[in-house]
Length: 321
Image (cartoon, rainbow, N blue to C red):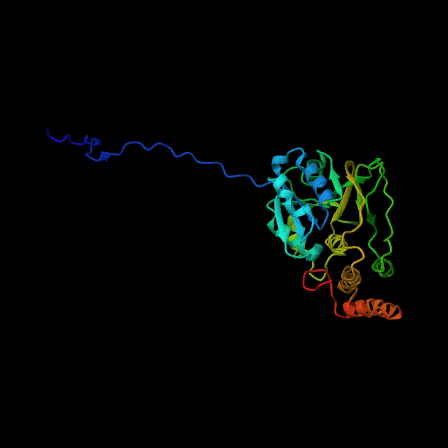
């Protein structure tokens, strides 16, 4: 049987062949980046962390929210959280590297241009994250305003205000806080639609990622403490505002700091405060601040603390407690 010849290609009047029309290729849509990246830094806080993540999972517009959990070498069930919440991104650190380094790692990993730093002790409402994002960025194409960060009103389980808001601390106030005292609090006029605040602790704050990048991320001179005060001072220095919206709420569940009482954490608190003073008042002010703390430790015959203070030790993973 003779072999069949292939069909002749179609030709146009000039004699040139015409190739069969190609079927259009289906183009898969590019996955959209999340609108907000929620960042939680945790250490041995499994129960609180689970509650915080579950609340974030229940958020409105969950598909536009990235949840990043940075575990700082916990020894409890925290490290297994992504088994129950497979949609979160779990970053496991080998040691407690301090809040500043942990937040920097998560910030560089985050995909969104709005960052929501939130404590494991905070339980957001379903609308909290979206409402904050709408206040900070009402229109993705809108020009940037003078507001760098926004935050909800934190309330306790009974609905009473629980936000930890302070004025920018003086050196004397820092000295008291470095010894374990409390910073002065700011009274809030909750009748206003929004309130300009100076220094909120990083319990729940939404900020533009490019602002954190513009200050070269969180200063590595801070370990576990005072990165929040530095952020507040950087925002003020840039002529920007932090605004609290009383109509946007989240529940704050007070709990002890998981590193409270650790000798290295105590030194970190003092050395971080000295670094903050030095950054804004100069090296001599920092030296004077730390000298006062060293003399106080000597008066208590706490030679271990003297060594940690003079060595500038902090919670950053480089020293053992």
